[in-house]
Length: 375
Image (cartoon, rainbow, N blue to C red; front, side, top):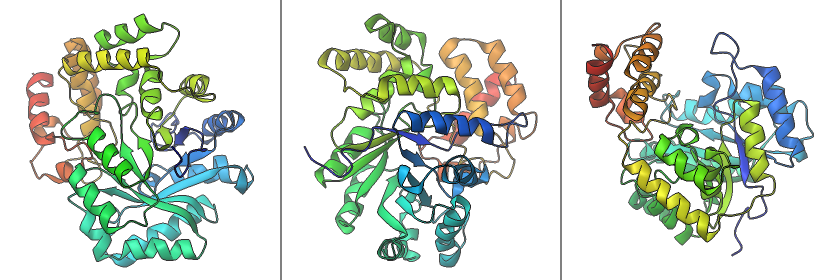
């Protein structure tokens, strides 16, 4: 079936989790250049960043590693405007677009998104007239194609696409772990988007890296089916094999990850029936394992009054839940809280839960982490 973006290469480079220098905060530009070069050499062209990612320097890194080094027509760049984070009124929200243009030096964006729409913030985009704003920028030639990224249920997605039929594509969280998840609604949201004839950019295909190293029972299923393929490849190919996919974003931070992704996505082949059955068996095995389904996006951290590194604490907890390594989990926890608050410092203000794309019950999880990891 024909759709917008059908000929776009099915692997996109997500610039949210770029490699860091020894301080753990500053992006390693030289290493990022190497990743960009390898990506471009493979004939892949889609790069994804966002205004709010530049708390870590993502847009500036895109300029240094990509825009300043390659002809503008040799790649496509996507950025995003978030009307509920890092702004306080209509003017500061709209300014994100112009700041992103300046940071990236791109001149225009091939793709542009209203960022992370959900029940807690979607009305802000109406209040601040952001829908009309991006259409105005498109008319000026500063945006070629636009849409929105989404973190809510399929009913709200249907409502938004009905109200805004001019949207060209949507960005959805799709992976085999969340396909039937009643909180994320990957399948239901995918089906709504396709019902409206919208192309889809996939985010979190590896669920923040969790599906690159899932529980051993899941790994065993994939390795038995094809020992030569990485475990992560099954997750990316699952998403890319769906109809209507514009591209699948992968937040690569090492050359090993880049080379692995290129090995099976440069000449992408969709899953066959046997491989789909393998993924189904993996889904069953994964659902049997208790864990905290955090994707380490760190949105929850920015406004935490106690400066709790929530994703790192959850990663430590999962080491115990998934692998039964309580000692290692406590060591990881000690590192996670060495420069910030402990799980027990949580004052239950709820700021984190309001911005969590995964709709996690973070306050409750932190209480459990405190009991287990601070004992």
